[in-house]
Structure formats: structure tokens, C-alpha cells
Amino acid sequence: MAFTLYALIQTAILCTNAVAILHEERFLSKIGWGVDQGVGGFGDDPNVKAQILTLIRSIRTVMRVPLILVNSVCIVLLLLFG
Image (cartoon, rainbow, N blue to C red; front, side):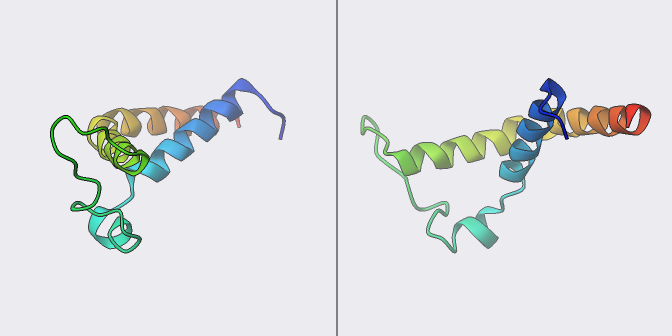
């Protein structure tokens, strides 16, 4: 497989899908990254763990519908153009 822009886009979509399907109670809490971890007070500088948890929650919240559409378009393009 050649290194193309489409392959790079597919890789980004695949990684975003992987982050979007992480379940907080089943997976993240087992490794110590659950809901209760990483909660800081107002005015505290968030550490790296808290920022990553916020990013994961944001991706799951914001990217749910756009990922469905983007995945559908990628599947159709792959079926049409191989």
C-alpha cells in the first residue's frame, strides 16, 4: 500500500474511532483513568492525565455523529474505487 493522502486520512479516522469507542466504566476505570480520576479544582493547572481524559470525553461527545458520516463516506469510496 502506497503512502497517500487517503491512507493518512484513513489512519486519522481509524485512530479517532479507537478513541471514540473507549468505554469509561469497562476499560478506562480498570487502568485508573475513570470518571473520578483527574478531577481538579477550579484554578488548578490540569495535569497531562486530566487533559487526555478531557480530550477522550470531548471526542466521544462531539465526534459521534460526524464519525458516522465520515466512516460511511470512506466505506462508499472504498467500495467504488477499491
